[in-house]
Length: 62
Figure (cartoon, rainbow, N blue to C red):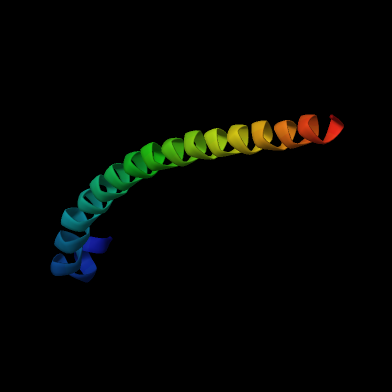
């Protein structure tokens, strides 16, 4: 059906669709790696903050 409408549009879609999928896959995997790093750094920061607050509570108790 699409070929009947426009051969140029058909070719553009056949070339463009795989390129878009490749870019989406690459950016998705990069996003996953970055998200994991952010999550790990956030956990480290929370752990340090928790230790600091616990130390403050301990010092205040004396």
